[in-house]
Image (tube, rainbow, N blue to C red; front, side, top):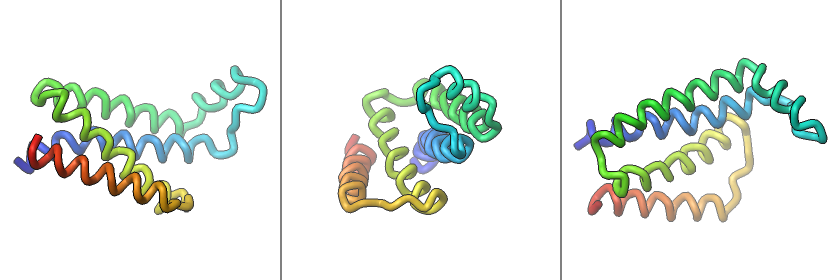
Length: 119
């Protein structure tokens, strides 16, 4: 049972970590008016490249999950990435976590527990 959730959790965790690394990799890069320059600058950033690689690795590992689990069971658990990203953004990026985000995360966690326990 635990092994089942570890196999599901690894690509979810990679996805959330990838988001943080990509954000860090952007540094001060913003869209402004030149979309082409934004993408060139973004895609040449080592942090963005590492984040995309982790995201891709997570997607590949997710194929293992899809080969073993019902989509109706596994895919809702991806919402855990939102909660992990909020925690990581607070811990690493020093973002402020508002009460609505906390409440939303708690609701997600209740849903995950219901699916994990009864799904």
